[in-house]
Amino acid sequence: MKKLPKEPPSSEITPESTYKRRREFIRNAGIAMGVAAVGGAGAYYWHAAAAEDGKPPPPPPPGAGKFDTGEEKTSFEDITHYNNFYEFGTDKTDPAANAGTLKPKPWTVVVKGEVEKELRLDFDDILKMATPEQRVYRMRCVEAWSMVIPWDGLPLADVIKKLKPTAKAKYVAFKTLLDPAQMPGQKGTALEWPYVEGLRMDEAMNPLTLLATGIYGKPLPNQNGAPLRLVTPWKYGFKGIKSIVEINFTETQPPTSWNIAAPNEYGFYANVNPEVDHPRWSQKTERRVGGKRIKTLKFNGYGEQVAAMYKDLDLTVHF
Amino acid sequence: MANLSSTSPASRKIYNALIYWAVFLAASAPLAWHGYKWYAGKAKVSLEAELIVRYFGYFALILLLASLTCTPLRILFKWSWPARVRKTLGLFGFFYACVHLFIYVFYQQDFEFKNLFVRDEDLDRNLYATIFGDAWKFPFQLFGMAAFLLLIPLALTSTNWAVRKLGGKNWQRLHYLVYPIAILGVVHFYMGIKSKTEKTPAWILAGVLAVLLGVRVVKRLLPKRKAMSALKPFPLTPRAGTPVGPLPEGEGNSNQADAASQGETL
Image (tube, rainbow over all chains, first blue to last red; front, side):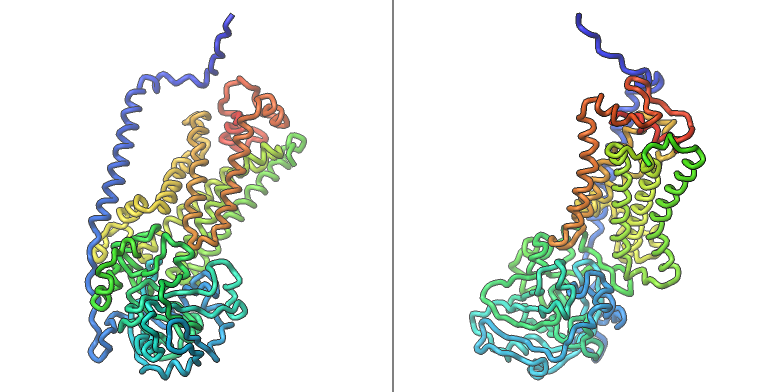
């Protein structure tokens, strides 16, 4: 004889009041889902529609350099205590705390690759290659914060002319010091060491590009990349390679450290662009350190000087 | 330690209280520490906000996973004391998740309380539309937001009153949501790690979560008889087929939510 299935326990029985309202329940659930979907889509489109071009930055004050910004400068304290310099630790306060072990003097920079003559230069040799200038630039980190920094340094274009690259040189590659004794963060695996970066030749020769040697008239503090670092204000800050020991002229596009670490997030060009979001967060706004949250400008507001270099480039692909 | 039926009611009460307060203090410590630093002006909040967001998010995930170890500890080692702090751990996890989200939102609006309620004219945006809109756009943020939103009904129904109102069975079904929440949390954590060489902590947590869920899966797949004999040391386990309802308040029962789950067969 076929066994009857076991009766469910009485506690499983739906209460009569709920059972009578079952159709209402299904209807209410459907409405709730519909509202949530519409609300979510609405929030998304409202957000998307609100994005506009930001106001242009204030012009330089009278007497200042023609590339300087008139915005309020970030304090020396903030510039030197809020840094991404993973060679000294991955927290923002680590470089200021730990960069004491770096010895910026004596400093040698090797020049190699597609050049007329390979060189080993002292820091002082480099200083003699161009007239030092002060530039007040915005610096926009890919993490969506920014500063206004008064750099002292040499226009990279002038230095490159002195280094005499050959016609085969299409890119300039840079390398940071590799010495875990001086840079304890290099004992870790946060990035592959040494840190490498590179620019296309026209980007390196752009009048904005600076080889920085100081800030606020003082020599570059260790945590800011002493004694020599790259400044490309229209690109995200990670392009500003610090503590440079090698300048290598190459024919092909050189590898760059953050592109190696996360290729879907960080590209070679890394131009500041509110229209191209980071995979994990929006690039439409930035937090000015010491100030307020503001809209991000295309090319960090330096489009007039740099946009022409990218007019044929799809910036959503070449980010 | 496992077989509490042999100890006196008074010592069991003290024992339970000690465990509860130990967990409470350990879980409160990070919040107290950072709260003190902020209040005393020792921490420059704007500079450290990212750090705190990351740290509190990580701690919320740890607490959530800790709450998920209570049942496996009972299944594997027959320890009953973890179940008594499961709710505490879960609620603290929710609390840290709240603070994690709040500081992130606060950070988006320059740490000005008034900006939480006003449309920002300079940025031409509504904060909440941006936060939720961004969550919709970026999977990393979506997983975190989803995990948080799913946690809310669980936190709201963590009381004995809620267990009574929902009924043990429905309450348990709702609280099974903690499994997808934990998965979303681990994936959110994994995606939040910047460099692909540093993903190891996320893999470790994923492994831990896999074990915690795996124990439950194995237990469900085992024949009922084996499962019942594993639960034998418990004085209050009902036999199979007995209706599961709220059990009387009494010795060994710290709250009805735990009792309801001790009676279930998973």
